[in-house]
Amino acid sequence: MAKRSCLWLVWTRCAPELDAEFNKWYDEIHLPMLNKGGHIASVKRYKLSPEVPSEQPPYLAVYEFKDVATFKAWQTSEALAEARKEMKGTWGGRDMEIKARAFYEPVGK
Image (cartoon, rainbow, N blue to C red; front, side, top):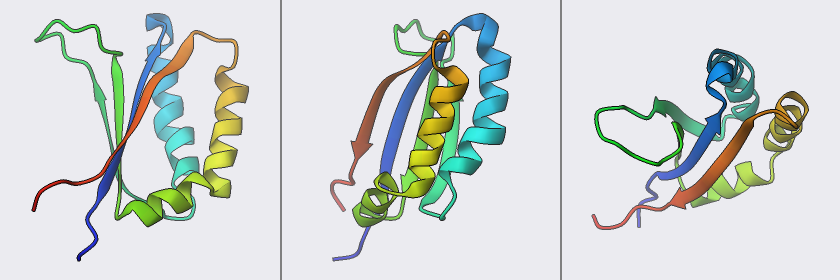
């Protein structure tokens, strides 16, 4: 059976006055730290659109991994541990939080 990519989704919110700082940090510091070691195949970030009313958190990051084994290796990697530590140092006690995380495996053909 061929390995198929999996997705790690992270929903985040921050105070509106921190949006610019949050996005700059995420793109310039957090993502490069998370991707050390090359586990992540791709990342796409989204901001909730006002087109459809929703109570969902405003930010969604979609991380693609080539398979479950690569995701598991990343979960125990030094890169992820360092990124989490840096995030706590930068955002601890500030109005930013991860609201939900979910890991999705492919179904069907």
